[in-house]
Image (cartoon, rainbow, N blue to C red; front, side):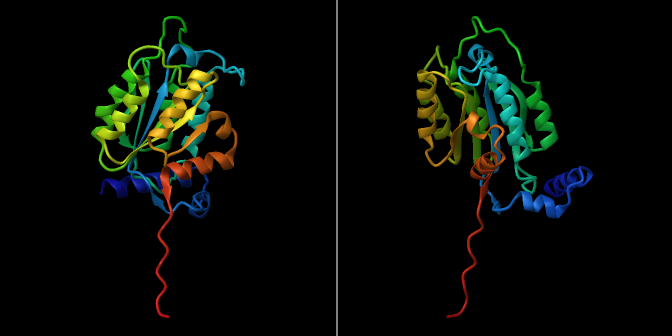
Length: 236
């Protein structure tokens, strides 16, 4: 019943926005079935994320927010019964507790991520973040996509790769995706190691998908969608 009510609500929002059901279906071309039951956005808010990206020249946290807002637009609307959540780390903070996904609500929560915070003395205990997130993910039912958005700048605490590996091991069916804003060798190396934990999942540079509709839609399909198995042919 909850799913039916929420699906009807999502359809109402689509129609109110002037999008016909046919247009909504066209947007979801090649996306037949949900790959996951839940997704968690896990966003770095350490000091280094509030410095300018060495190549892009913009504050990394603002680039992260823009990337997530674009991704939010591409979450398949027909999968109206996904649960979603938004957490920050360094320090760990709950912005949206796990609940039925709603595009508008998620956009509001992404906007709540501060555009500016102090840089000095804001270190990056990334391992602590994964440890704090583990009971959240373990409490979710079904398969979960955890989308880590970070510059990989872990510089205090334990081993972030070991902590992320423990998170995945604690809840079978967890897929770890990485959206990287790394602009130094150490950050790139850490994000690359995170991506190897679940190699069947996606790792991308934010610059690769931000502002590129086709690549953002492909990333969304890779995270959320699977194809319907072909119907067996009958007869000879």
